[in-house]
Length: 544
Image (cartoon, rainbow, N blue to C red):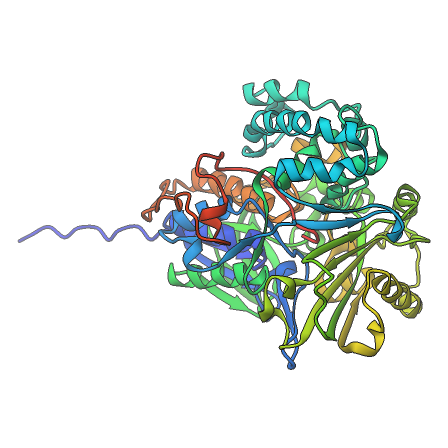
């Protein structure tokens, strides 16, 4: 009589909390490694801060991030699942990447282009000496990125991880005594040139006068590897990730908030949803740390990130948002415009104190310049962002300030050549720091999460394998490497690699596909990203 074979062991079950970019990336990667994955999202939509806001009239807005830097990381995640990103999302590389308007509209106007020769010519209008320094700046940051890439691809649990050879090789290049502005002084003498290559620190919610000089690589990424628009907006990427995740067996539960994570000792063993215990071999948390940690994880299990520590941590700035459905198209307005206040540094100091700047700087997203599907025919979907202080650092009465802020932002739009803007508005929504906290569960309204100063990066940031717990992993802007869409995707790769090692999951269970080779299809990501570029690079988004 034939001997019966034992039933194969059931794959480990992983619960992912949150369907933001990090949670979706983690779910995809874990499904590719053979895990059973259940994803619970408290809201009725996927995307987290990269969700879409859509009106019945057909206006479509990205809630937060409005572009992609270096989509190759995302290509690699799709490839691990046996899919091609290009089959799901079309990416268009922008040129110009954005327009910078200096001095509140009274200074130079620069259309930033990824073409080095044209960019140097544009810089000549500010300072010919700075224009000549551009090749050296790009070359040095190309080298800096290669040196720091291994650091950005590994997890950090303690100071001992700083002794790893790749980290030791990179640390001398960190230059911790230099802010980003100080670092740029090594290349550029005109403050406006330095601002052109440092305003990107706002992707981290920080001032270039306080942000570590390491982050000069952010502007380098834009010029070296491009700024991309996903057709349909950034939420099209989240929707594609959710679609592929479901195809690979991930169970996505929308409108199902997690009440808390359960533990056996220090080991996460499930979650409570609607009073029901969901057993799990591991838990991945993709939620705002300041908001979610006190609710989901008992304080006794997180001594390094106690409630008191979370209250006294340093957080990014916040933003006031206007989402405007406007009658008319505005060919004079490019896809991205950054309007920089004349007293830019003074405004940043006010933001750091939790105040509303006297003279606001603005970012304006006009996606119909590239993608007409973002608004009804003959109309525009304008996204207007004003950096402001977060709720912890200030005591602004945001409800009372709404009318004044609206008027100030619309007046600034008129200065960009949009006349009678108020009369053209057909749909309007404002989001203040208070709304970020109450409507979108963003702790202290700090839209870019924990600040990225030297005291809160690497091992001093909440770890990908969280603290002293077991089988609890973090993804998102609050863990290493930090904020910004590609950085969050990289963090998901770090966290899921640690989880896979801990649970003994295979490396790549599904057949991976080669990345799209270089081509010449206009606007397609495979034709715009050189095929021999390094495959794992960080990046950011304007409101990640």
